[in-house]
Length: 428
Image (cartoon, rainbow, N blue to C red; front, side, top):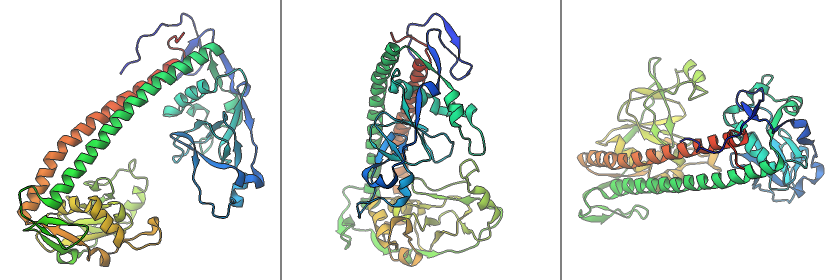
């Protein structure tokens, strides 16, 4: 998607930065030390009087925090005060920092790791926000990084020259981008809602297929279990110990290490170093890993309560933190995965997991083996898997189309902001 044709400026001046290029000649290149005023107001012992703020992809937000005694602990005494209209910059580059700039709407406090600035009177803060959100994409300020943590020093940031149109143009560009971005965000939201409906439809198709079968006219019976309800009369209800035994076979050096995702089940190949920063550690120590074969089921003992379970389709091995179930009855592992990734069966695994908090929950084999499973005849299991694959593939294609459209809209928004704040077209 291309930026529409707008009127162009006639004369330009170089900025010295390739990612900005040239800007209109009448724009000022002003050093940030004349735009931003550094603030370092620690909240001290008054931390309980402030909302706790955080810099996220959605900008600066207020965070909920359990505070039963009405006071924040002493560790918050070093936090900085933030007022409405203040800028918060992250001047260091770390993976867990999703965004490096935000403009606060709130009065609160934020960690001292960030840098808080006020602005001079003759600038439009939202114009600066758009400019630095644009700089934030693809880390365009990386030329200012120094040191092991890729830090931007306050002196380097203060010396950086921001292109500034006259105030009237700053306001016009900001208003223009507010309108355009609101329309784009609205279109993105519509498509995200459509994706949510498609995913809901996909889940309904799967749930109906694995709990009621493919024949809507089939006679039904009470399963005898409240949360399962009616099932086809010829289906059985079994506990997992009648279908699986735990497998602890050791892996071997030539096998790929597979992972179990709460989103997509068991992987079909080993993750690359780029995909998994811990892969180097995994590769060095394979002796304790567990062998898995096609047709087995594996689950992440710590993430089963979130749906971290799946069928194995390739010969490989999994982490010793996973549990491997080897079929001892006629069962299609793919059917079992579909069943156990439905909300009701995720709930069953959650209820059986042990732990006082979510991040400590574990689904041990002795508890997994007692869970209940629906068991259609093996031919029907395979038919259900095939039917679900066919029906959901169309939905997945529809989701993929919507996702590509969203990506195009976001790319257009990014290019529009970049062109507007660097003077590539006239707004007034």
